[in-house]
Length: 365
Image (cartoon, rainbow, N blue to C red; front, side, top):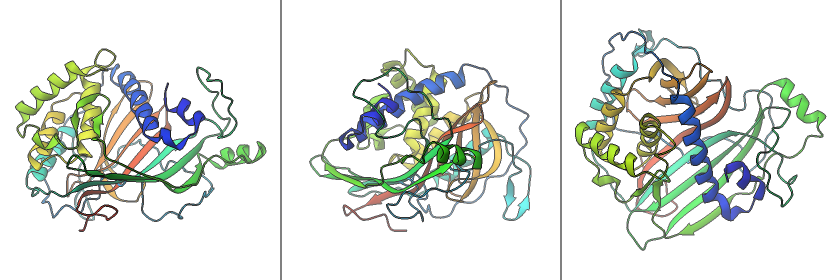
């Protein structure tokens, strides 16, 4: 059962299962993406940039910044934002165009930046992320019968919402998640919006926010059941040690039989970048990724929150693309997204990530 099936079932209690469903499908999508070899272009050098105090502009529990609160907003065009695509010239200094840095050079520079970040701690690990995801069916138009695969809508529509989570770093303490905030619906083009209107303008989203408290220890991902947000601080801080550890985790992963190591490393890399790993582990992770083939730099790009970073992607001959946008000043992940044959499927912008000592409070700058 994937996330489309859970979306048809609709109960709010299945929020966590829906997230697991997405992760399962993401593994399949990544497997397809990495099935086709990709040749990396020549690598011009690019100097590392000095890092300032990390602003925690990461994984913003679903794109919290500035959308209409708890209202379904229908606008014309660009619901998932501009497609990840053509290379853009990166800037080596603010306002001055420079050469596009290759992925390896950028990742190694990010590793140096990450290691200089001071370690932090707190009672809760907070994540605020904005998710924009393609809509596959109309809520309320399903029967109790579960079909193998729903027919796609005759128009491209995208649902955006914000999710905040507070995960307790100590056993026995209560965490919290507040989801389905700042809901908005957009369309891929004016023609898609016209087709939606011709279909009777059906409601495509539930705009009711949901909140729940729990005291369970969340795992990092379904591919890494032995890793939790409470033990990732114990991961190795050297490249070789982390690589060996990730290799071992991949062999023990429940999904390892269905996906290759490159898929696992890319996917787990995203999971770790949004977890409370130490600066040393973050640095080692960038070095591990720098050694992976098939990752290319697209130069400067903006995330859905309008922030500028460097886009790294892995693509296939059939235009299936996975992309990360990383802030070159802080080495923080700003956004990750998935595009299939030029059509955006998923964009997740990380608006705020970090430690806080009070449940319900956001990290202080």
